Length: 192
Image: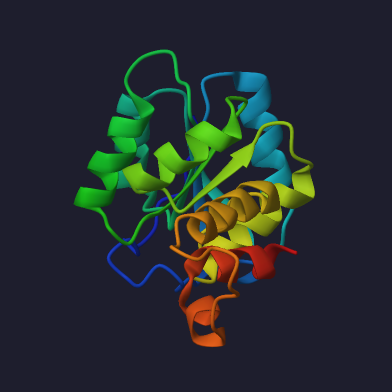
C-alpha cells in the first residue's frame, strides 16, 4: 500500500481542504479503500492526475484502512460499499463517530435507489455508482468537499418527489422558502 503522511485534518470543518504538495497548491488528501488491486490502482492514478487531489494512501480492507487513516490523515475516504471482510456500513458509522470531519464517498455496483440512502444514513457524504463516468466521480468529490452531499440526479429527484407525495396536499407547489431549505433540492440543482 502506498501512503503519504500528513497533518490530521479530519477534525476541521468538512469543506476545508489544503495541504501543500510540491507542484500543487492546497491538494485534498484522499484515501482509496478498494479490495481489487486493478480497480484501486486505476482510481488512484485517475485521482492523482487531478491538480487539486492527492491520494495519500490506499487500503484493501477495513483494518488496513484504519491504519492508513491514522498514518496519512486523509480529508476524504473513497470506499467501495462491498469489501471482502467486514461490514462497510458499520465501518462508515464508526468512522463518522470517531472522525466527524472525515468526508466519506461510497461507490458501488449495488442498486442506487436502495443503497444510496443506506450509506447516507450510515454517515457517508455521498454515493456514486461504479457504472458512472469518471467525471461524475470527480463531481461527487468536489460537491462533498464544498460541504454538500452527493447522489445522482435520479436518486435526488425520487427523494424529492417522495417528500412532495408525503405532504397532505402534494399537488400544491412548495414555497420558495421550503425549496431553499430542502437539502435534496439543493443537491439536485448543484449536480444538474
